[in-house]
Length: 264
Image (cartoon, rainbow, N blue to C red):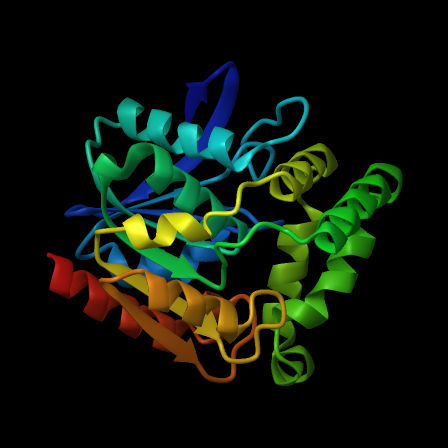
């Protein structure tokens, strides 16, 4: 694990392998270990950097909302610190929101995009209110209740019943998340911009992946992104829900490898 100081907080990251740079951004409420299978599969051909967003994992928290734009600036600052001019940038769920914000502000630093189990739309008013209620719940009771409520949406019923090691891993990531970090991210997601109009402006190769059974960012959201991003490929992963990169890691990695080979 490495650290870099960005705007008076320590940001944690891992840096593995060599070759073209692939920067992977985790979702909510996870940490950089979400990408362990991808690091193992790709670090023999790429420099794979995984980062803990502010307030998550081993990174420090900041006061107030952690906006998608702020976290995008954190990524740019991390790249500066590591002397990386351009990279392939990928994100899952909230990580995808951060990646789209990064592209909006730093398009010239993006070689290609990977958008997994995410969407371009902002929250509905109902969605925003749900996040605000979750903030209060976390502040009063911590992460355990949120983790247990989210698990059935993150994994397919088959995984929940037959793969207890995956369930434990996902739950452990969530309950270890700092409550203040989770609350800041929820506030940031609730106020995030709608990036739908940005999609037509994306002019780099883009891989879109989504679990067939994802109830949080369903296949229709990925189809919308695919239809509006000109140079994009859509992969629907069977027998996977919201964390498709773990639930069906072999398929996810195969598709990601093929995409990266065409870029390189």
